Length: 347
Ligand code: ADP
Ligand code: MG
Image (tube, rainbow, N blue to C red):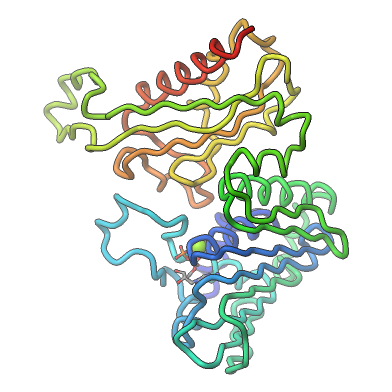
């Protein structure tokens, strides 16, 4: 119902960038290789995301707006091994309850596509239409029916910079997919399909920054990691040994000469999901201790991969927080891998 959706929207949709995040993740989950984001007035007036993913058949197009109607989880056990970015089935109904939304989608297996129009959670129109395969979602007038929420939005420029940072994050994490971001008539980001992360780094950060970046990579078998014995109170509860599989780190870190005054250039992904995590930030700070001043930050683009059972992504709907089961081990692994790469880069 509308009230429940608006309450959920309070958690999921904080600002225009949160809408962009949810829609981008849906496009990625749909296997899109081309994603175009368009905004007006920092997303307050318009947000449009067009993808060439697998689209939705007509029945699913309506179902997508039912609360908790996710096509990505079948059983509650699946929650322990989430492979897609989305899983709550909350984003679309939440966004649709606080905006005017138009969905245009077509799946390969159907001859025609579907248009769904919703305003403030009320379905206004559902019609078949000739459409290309893929999905386009247009959000107009975010928070038009929740004035209290609208008041909390910052300036258009601030909201736009959050959106640009977000699209940049996902473009970095998905080098082989084409991303575009447009604000009104201005192209803010164009990242055509790149062969490697290193090529994408160059596309996005330019020659100067990317020339100061060095690779960092390591992997370790969780089951052979010599993890400490569980403390007695855990042994008595149901202690589970580490999941079989590898902990892998790959990506790029800046050499000491490249320093930033804030953390905005630290990009960390866990199993493809953008995270902002204190534990990982701490590990990075330790790795750079005595190498750069404590008031500076490095440029970092790191991808951590691990068995899905080893990381809980179900902490908060906005999903940038995670909880690692072997947190001390993950922390030290990141610190040591980055430190080693830095030491090898020294003249
Ligand atoms: P979740 O991503 O958690 O499953 P959402 O509310 O974000 O929930 O989306 C609901 C459903 O709508 C998804 O499970 C998916 O089936 C479908 N969907 C949403 N966006 C797209 C898209 N761009 N392409 C294909 N299907 C989509
Ligand atoms: Mg989703």
